[in-house]
Length: 86
Image 1 (cartoon, rainbow, N blue to C red):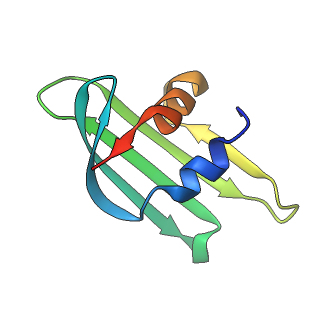
Image 2 (image 1 turned 180 degrees about the vertical axis):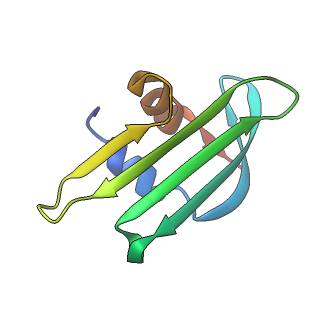
């Protein structure tokens, strides 16, 4: 993962909200499971076809494990680092 990814991801609010990425609007949902040890983010482009989905697992070692859902890791990282939450 890119340096700063986990910190930026952690700064995103939990729940549903809007955001802008590369001039396009998204509906974003961030949820927590297993007492925060597992988190999921989904973002759907409003009026378009783009979709972002991934899980982030917090390992006992303190490391984070990123698991994109059927898309390149770079797409997920770029989105999280570039999205502006409204």
